[in-house]
Length: 121
Image 1 (cartoon, rainbow, N blue to C red):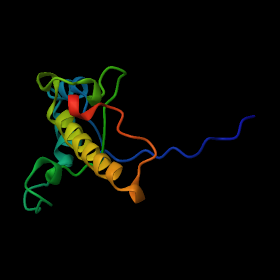
Image 2: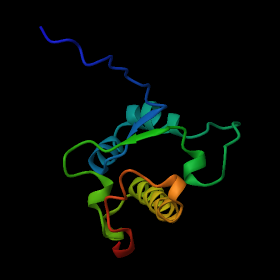
Image 3: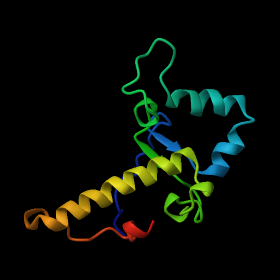
Image 4: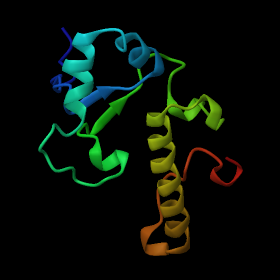
């Protein structure tokens, strides 16, 4: 018997939010989805948001895109991106900028550079 690879921890929807386009669209017709999944992602009436932008309003700290062709890195054209894809691309741009800064600073040199050619996107 093989040794277990580790523990699987299922996070509650408040912290782990499936944001692939099909998952979001499929749930739009479901009141249960809107109440249980979507509403819990944002501050409730009377709660003060962390920030006024989407990233600050969103409670989830893990966004995931289910399906092999649903990853935000595959959506190069802004026309094909969802709001959540745009959050990913924003974080990607910040990472690339940080990687460029680290390339200039020998003491912070990254072991692996940015996978995408950031300047061409």
